[in-house]
Amino acid sequence: MINKLVEKIKKTGAPIVVGLDPMMKFVPEHIQKTAFAEYGETLAGAGEAIWQYNKGIIDAICDLVPAVKPQIAMYEQFGIEGLVAFKKTVDYCKEKGLIVIGDIKRGDIGSTSEAYAVGHLGKVKVGSQFYYGFDEDFVTVNPYLGSDGVEPFLKVCKEEKKGIIILVKTSNPSSGEFQDQLVDGKPLYEIVGEKVAQWGEQFMGDSYSYVGAVVGATYPEQGRILRKVMPKTFILVPGYGAQGGKGADLVHFFNEDGLGAIINSSRGIIAAYQQEKYASYGALNYADASRAAVIDMKEDIAQALASR
Image (cartoon, rainbow, N blue to C red; front, side, top):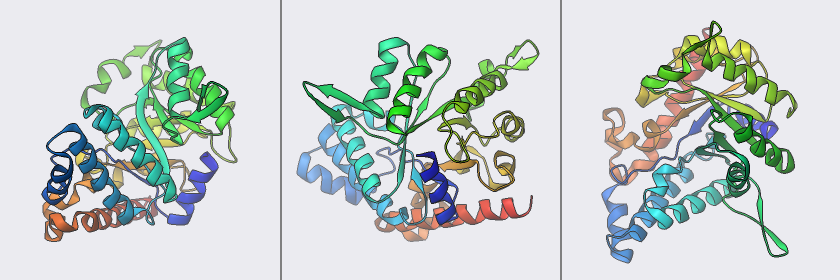
């Protein structure tokens, strides 16, 4: 799957992943009204609204980007109906040829971690049959329970030729409370990065590992350090746009080949119509605003890479 991701980045010229993180305040009123007319102001109505909202965005951007990243919490808040919308979104994205990174941030031990891995990446046995659950291509994993929490994911990745992306240095302001703590003179995030590189050596694609890393755009200096620590690791970079990251902050996340990183933008794209820059599109044309935001992001990253 990492080979497919690299190929699609080369084909689109866009090292971009769109975060499909719907909130009801992002969903235009006309979509909400249609969904509520059919299902009422219920969890089912909310699930239908976010599914239709996602579908419009996917249709608008699927030819521009290689991948999407639905954040499962944004769906779980609506209960089972939200998870139905999550699954519909995953399946539709794959129909459109997009690689799906399930942003689930799971990490537990033993059979629990194995169940997460099977449910999101692998197949579960039901009687004599096997079925995919959510069936994403990659998922994000929290490594802070140690190898016990990661190895079940690695096992399923090997079986399914899929991938995981491990949290190393996250984009949130308080990440340093733990991740920057020094251990024998090294920050903890660097030690985790070294471990990610070790795990990745066992699961290599043609050029990059099936084991990726999350490193926030809001910490470009740490990105420079971690790029050297993890030369064969594909880095998922959140924090672009709404969280303050910009193209100039991103150059250190890429290798000399112009690859090695994929930049995430969520509400900066999916809620672009609510920004002053794209307000002229209006709520009815929210998906066109999202497409314009992707094009602008692609140009910003390209200019930054060209000037390094």
